[in-house]
Length: 206
Image 1 (cartoon, rainbow, N blue to C red):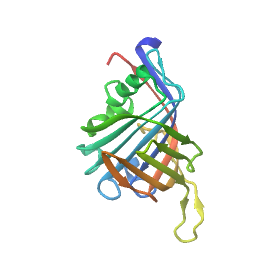
Image 2: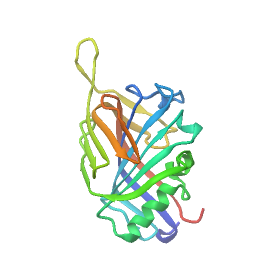
Image 3: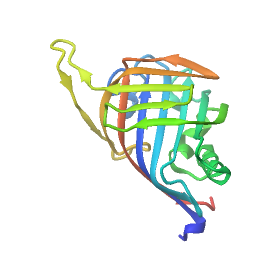
Image 4: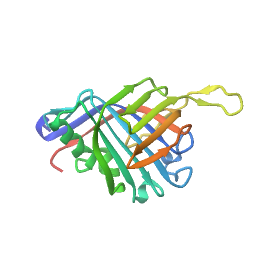
């Protein structure tokens, strides 16, 4: 593959949803409450789509599904980094649209209703499970560790997912605050979070 007919992204993804800590969906089980509301913010350390560089940019998908994600009929809010120029925004839109593969090629069909993409300012502090993310006025996340319900002690479990499409390994936490508002709206503060590295790639001719 040459640079002009391929894409590659590396960075860190922060995940939050309404499931209990650990999220059974990671293990091919149904969501804790029978439905899923949550999403992902990707921070790209190094990335390109063709000759468009996405270095140091952020983008997000937050969605709500009436059942498990794989059952579809979801509604999504898509956000793009306001610092991106028009070519970079087009590249991110194409990626999230799912036509180039990656995790969005698996998941994109599950949210037929879309709000956005909206360009928003990002305030991202990546610090493991203690990360904080603000996506304009639409998303606010403050992460923290899981606490033992008996002793109150902090717990720092991890996860390894050889077949994972979002992450292959990550740290697991609990949100202190997780609020989404923008076409869809929910507040799942106190629920599941995870953070880990990602490394995705593919071709443009698919």
